[in-house]
Image (cartoon, rainbow, N blue to C red; front, side):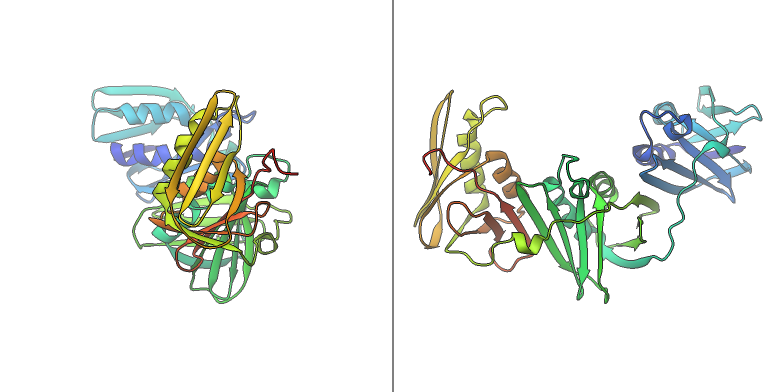
Length: 368
């Protein structure tokens, strides 16, 4: 194998593909990137048996061929090369010579046959979305994915397509995040994508309105994003019935500036640490939200203006869960709906329900 490729283009591609490579594996090939050269292009593959990524670059191919190279070492070498054009030559002993400018490296590779095959994804259903829409949907829900393996299906986000509307939902037992958008798709479809996959997809998505293609099979999903194909296993199991978890009515509706409440929560949270935990006591009144916190370190109180309809409510919250929801609201103003001190708080946009965050309350000590 002998190829010449643009150094910067290769360095960027390797950096992305490397994220689908195992950092530690009993199978050495899984710690590598598979390079395949032919037809004046170079294809790079990374696969850790759960997540796979592939992309193709233009290259000048003198001799076609393939090899697996250590992802970490290959990435470090390519990134630091000084010239514009980089040449890779592989001999029949699987030794790769990498030359760029005045620098050259010889590294030992692994035969390409040892690389595991990507699973064949058949019986797929596909739909398209704008990059910026999918990016926003993932970003506004990924924070509420469960970090615990107690219920593996909740370590991913539910994608539910019905009547031309896509709902993306994440839950972790203490909170729920939901985002919905119209999608050009007629049928109904439901699947759960692992959180790790979504975080890699998020890094590849841009903020423009070009389209990403999503192909869903019975057990796998394929995302085609700007020349990259991301393949992932889907999670199996019964996802929480999120519609039943969302309170339908409310006795109190508050409207206020997101930043005001965020700043207020952050100030009273200064007394809360990983070792010193305490709920934030929240009193929602006619013109203000009063927050207070009491820990072994001291007491704090703060308030911010709001407008309220309905009856006053006093309840407790985990400060981090409330802040996560506020940080992801992405609107200057929000609507908060409450149904008493022991019912979840709903955080929504001022109009409609394009996103919805649920935060479970924490029982305050002076309650029965």
